[in-house]
Amino acid sequence: MTRAVQTLSVLLLVSSVCYEVPPSQEHNPAWLLLTIDQLYLSLFLGLVPLNETVQTEVIPVLPFYALIVFACYLLARLGVAIFTFNDVPEAHAELQKEIELAKVELRQGKVEVD
Image (cartoon, rainbow, N blue to C red; front, side):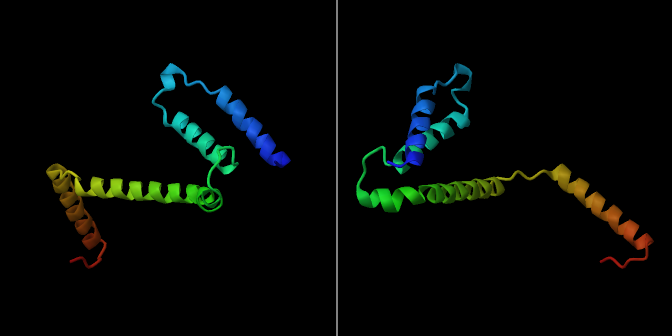
């Protein structure tokens, strides 16, 4: 083990020993992220024995895969939000009034408007 790996292993050990979730923070996503980071770091450093192929080809690209999965989740969430967007008739009427007001102001400024 190199000195850097030893240092990271000790830091991982210390962070896991000091890891106690306060009751007020049980549902805070930051604690889950800390746990996921610790798990990934232990896999990346080889502290958990895995198959050589998995260790060299799969584990190093997991953060990129997680980023792509997170982006797909956000795009799906955006698509659902757009699909279920509620129509507001009052806002539509207000927007139409603002458009007419803008057309009147542009015509007063001698700008041709359809």
